[in-house]
Length: 375
Image (tube, rainbow, N blue to C red; front, side, top):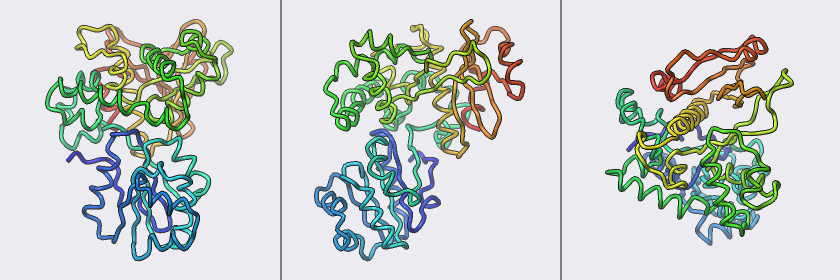
């Protein structure tokens, strides 16, 4: 058992709902059942797939909902996004049973947030469960061993089934199953999207442009849809934990780029599965993109898990000066350039140094990336 960073027991509060979001197959159910296997609380475990549970918790019938939880200290509902208006049902529970603890997991933040967000304002805590972070894999590997497996992470990612697969062939089979069976399931279901081929083509284009500025107009032209539809698709793909948008940073310079964004994949293996490229790092021309995507997302996982709150940006000027990642936290700017191969010393652009004097700059390479994603 690879220990997840979240400690459910410490996050549970009476009269509050602990909402655990995450993509399909990242281990939400395993995390929940592992906690339930050793808790001393008297609990009821249920699934949002259960039709009877759907009927009760979506009914807004106080008597039925309170009877459902009678005698229990903890209610745990997996796949809660399947329950219509689940937020109202959970609100009735915690409002009328303030001693009760509740856990709800969901595979799509988009739908679950719509169902629980407003009704549970002030009554919930939300956390995101990602594919395994290197921070979590420290429970089975030391830092030396993590470095030895870097190429594996770059190509196959870190979904639980991928990490526990026995060989390369099995890893590829797992990724292909994730991509073909799970990847767009929530997206298509939640939004009644009929243009499956268009959505898939858009995803491929984003996969090839990882770490690059993306023009929505160009994407719309290449996919054959309008810009508003592209914006909608990208928003939904992010809410389904497939991609992560990083916007441009601009405060003072007229020549700073402000119109475009960058997109990264929450998992390298999913990105490579979309473009069907599992070649070794020596036989591909996107090693730099893979490393940048990996470092960027591992950093986001780390910050999320240790509750280090940041705004994320990239910085670029019209005369091609750029920095890969800007973290804004605690009133200060931290600039990071991510380099797969840094043969010469990299310095921050003069425009950045002169304009943002109260900032720090660091280059992240194969030599020092572990400190960046573990601490």
